[in-house]
Amino acid sequence: MTRKVAFLFLGETLLIPHLYPIVEALAATSDVPIELWVSTSVHEALLARWTAPFPTVRIRRAPGFRAVADDGSGRNPVLPAKIPMLLRLLPYLRSASIVVCAEQTSLWLPRLFPMRAKFLKTSHGVGSMSARDDPRRRAAALTLVPSELERRTYLDRGFAPDKFVATGYVKADFAHRTHAAPPFADTRPVVLYAPHWQQHRSSWWRWGAEVVRRIVADGRYNLIFAPHQRLIEKAPEVADLMREVGDLPHVHCDIDGFAMVDGSYTGVADVYLGDTSSQVIEFLMRPRPCVFLNAGGVAWEGDPNYAMWVCGEVVEDVADVVAAVNRAALSHGEYAAVQANFAARSLGSVEGGAARAAGEIVKLIDA
Image: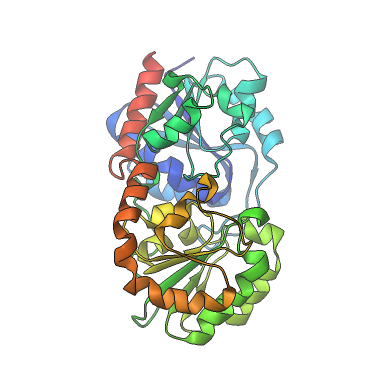
């Protein structure tokens, strides 16, 4: 076994900004050989573009690699089946010292098979609805989380303290965003509507289409409609609505573009409109107005699953959505301090997380 680190880029493109900053930080500070295993040509093209300055980094195609049509913008591709790919990849990973992943599926390998390589799991996203009790998590030699608050949620479940390290929010160090400015010709305030993909957590099924149509018809806002990438798997009617409104000059729709996962939209929006997506916490790295949609009529106050809803007005009637967005900027002073505290506690540091994560990899190699 060599001092080699393998990074697994096998899942959706949304995982890339949570994982790739660690690659850059490790390559910039260490001479350890780094292999990036990719599942599709979309992943390969993005990573090849960014890794050119780093001679220690090699991109490798995982068994079952899929070449897909791509216009170079990094649209989320249809992925090969993950479990067969992992099983076929297993022999190649035996030469690595550390294997780094950003999702639970890859942890089936150390859970089911004896491996010398140590698996390091880094978080993707943050928030109160993470599946922390998944037994695969115990197969990781080390898990990196953004904050001490997040770390404490695992320790409270009986996980060993030395298996979890708070590094700060790694995605904050991602330097390859698609948009540095709003994708509109005018300067109307920008509303980002980002409903969750899971039905029990989402505003989409009850209110989503009406929310979009109300904001669009009001005309005072530029709307970015960018739901979670996986929503269209469960709700194909999303594409119909995007075709209906997507050509309007004050509407920008995205369901599979890299911009919707690289921090572009949370970075350029003026108002966040959503439900339980952890994207709101990323948005609150720079506190701004938020409006939350209680489409399911849940009794949310005091429920940790809805902890982020203290950061803005919670709408109980879809007819009040536009008025709530109008109020959001005026009432932001009531929420700014709450937002800043919530983001700091949830995300930890928003600078240097990738470098700290790279340092933990080096320590694990030498352990």
